[in-house]
Length: 111
Image: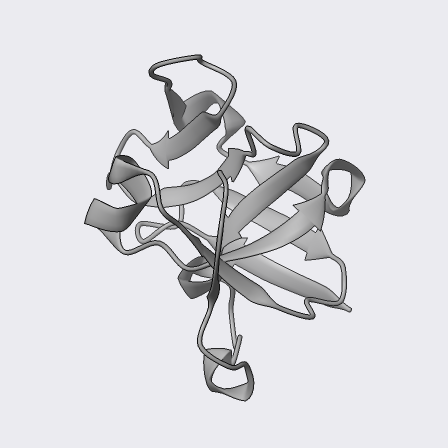
């Protein structure tokens, strides 16, 4: 299943080619404060088509997790996961026509 995604201003556009089966949240301070709901997808399933040069990177602590934001509108679009560095956590609210209500309450997981 392929889902198109973008930040709020549309400068960053990407595709997720993966059937999302569950949503997660994270218990780190950063994700808790932004109330992130993510779909865990393999690295090969995420392709940035526009705006890669507009993404800005935020890292802290061990610097294993790599959080990407649109430099123009500030929206968190996805991050490389700390506990699974070959996967991304994709902000499900950036995915077009994604119905998050079809999933149970997100599971808490490590970044």
